[in-house]
Image (tube, rainbow, N blue to C red; front, side):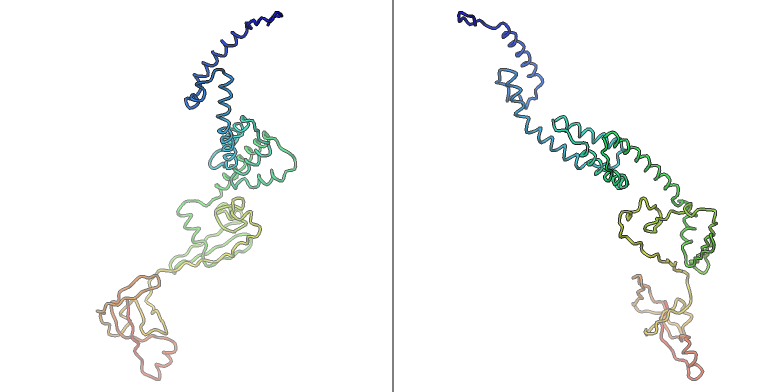
Length: 324
């Protein structure tokens, strides 16, 4: 406006209008079709930005809550340490891009919560450490801990029992009825039947871990104390070991005596007097539930010590029996 009161158009106004319309057209090309109905009647770029901000504000907050929830529930599972840390860093960067960056202590806490139980000792060290730690040093220590655990597992796998069938058979027979330890060597003798016997000697120069690995906490075989389930349970007491005696399945001709039974069983029908073929439908049920047929029936005398004393003064008595 001049001193005389005459209104003179600003020469820069037309330039601003031209630039604004060009930006307006560019925004039309990149805005998603779902937002076009809300900006189709607007006139300036400023109106477009305000409308987009108002429409997307609620969705940005929902996305932020979703990212925080994913970060709270993140777990390592079967990923490598680098993959696990990259996943956490991506979620933290997405949260920071929304204008609410996370505290480094919170990132460390979320990372520790997602580690598997094998990292329990490392998690205890970090949580009890009084000195603050930055993210870069924390990530470096995690990668180093992964390498240490991998080396520990490799050493344990070398100490596991051999999968050779002959070695497994010798190990299973070695846990038999009789054991004796003299000096520094270990002598083991096992007898599973009258005709089967196995004897093994472990010299003092050979470590016991070369054959099997025994846990120092629960006293079970196949794992070390580092991987024991009861490692963190301070009240756990290992159960007392029990000897397992192998049962013999060999056949015998001895009588199976039941002093309170009216009938007795024998696998050899020649042991009874006047055996007769059994024609009935009854069967014998044994301890495992199986039903066995009856082939013959007759009478016989059970040679007990008490009955042998009576034989000199009285005539033998017949005891009914049913052989199988």
